[in-house]
Amino acid sequence: MIESLLVANRGEIARRIIRTGRRLGIRTIAVHSEADGGLPFVTEADEAVCVGPANPAQSYRNADAILDAARSTGAQAIHPGYGFLSENADFARTVEGAGLIWVGPGADAITAMGDKINARNLMAAAGVPIAPGTTEPASDLDAAVAAAAGIGYPVMVKAAAGGGGMGMGVAADEAALRTEYDKVRAFAERMFGDGSVLIERYFPRVRHVEVQILGLADGRVVALGERECSVQRRNQKLVEESPSPAVSPELRERFLAAAVRAGEAVNYRNAGTVECLLDPATQEFFFLEMNTRLQVEHPVTEYVYGVDLVEEQLRVAAGLAPTFDPDALTPRGHAIELRINAEDPKRFLPGPGAITTWNEPSGAGVRVDSGYVAGNTVTPFYDSLMAKLILTGDTREEAVQRARAAVTQFEIAGPKCNLPFFAELLENEEFLSGDYDTGIVSRMR
Image 1: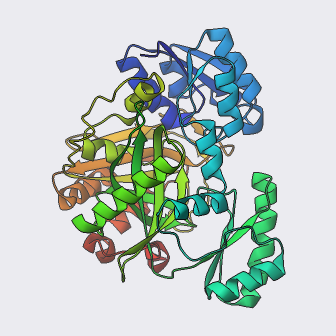
Image 2: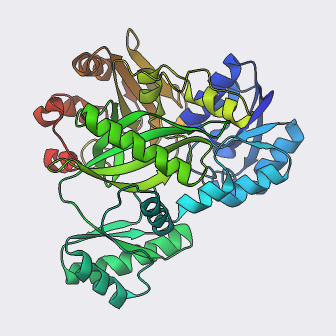
């Protein structure tokens, strides 16, 4: 097993990786910005190194500073968490070139799946269903208009290099397409340094379902069930649950088989997620993208399948066999995750601030992965996620009941907080029925 691990991230995910490292007897090293020096993940690591100012480009995305920290502390491996440098193929190559272990998929797989058009084409060749769309970037507005005419409106305009729900727009007709194309292209150039745009068919009523895969050290790819991620605002997830209430045993079998084919197509190693859109009317699903990293919502899979995904990541990176039998994966129970963000619960606008009260719920079936404690400050420099509230039970109904109680018990004061939104959602008949889609939040608002 790896003996020393540098965690190239912050907040709740850094704290969560450090927790598993401590359990396994691994020496953990945290890197942090000047703004994050007082957060729990810094003090809980065995060692910590400040890598720069609050600006992520000068700290958490500063590859040279992170590699210098790894060398100076004698780290054997680097775990990137999610976001920041986690899906940066050049950084993965640099880490391995420096003689360190990269706890993630190979750089070639990151590159292959990082471009949405290339990923779509690879998946089509592997027999994974894809939505109707372009097979190469729409080079200009005229090309986008011609592509949309062939696909049929409405269409989704997407940044080819985007991810995390960013760089997307919907066009119901040509006039809207002309506006969205310019908007998405400009955003993509600014955010990703790549203005390539693809055009896909847009499904007005759709569910967002993803499959957790794990590429093992022996070359096999296994699927650890699906997650429902349809409660979203601005194409970004707020709630995830496993198993999906929309997926039958027969549909699950098709989902998992397609996800394994996706991983095998790029010789995938380590943890990854195959994201899909599900048409609830036809039960057809289409490949959306592959996230070549650990997902924010991994805890719901951990409960349902009884694994520690961070431990499995470390084992794969070290060339070790998994702790579980890949041929005997059996799901149990139900898990729901609520993303507790520092944001207005009505309009979902960021609301950072100093935390004056922080009392976490506890009890049977309650897990909290948090990045903060009372006295910390949620700054405007990073994502608004403060904590993940994970509720589990033998049934979905039991998990929902525990979620209601935990949302009431969770006390946060200082920054704005979206806990009132979850209290509303957990009484919403559409959500409770399990028959909801990605439009549920807009219908609540």
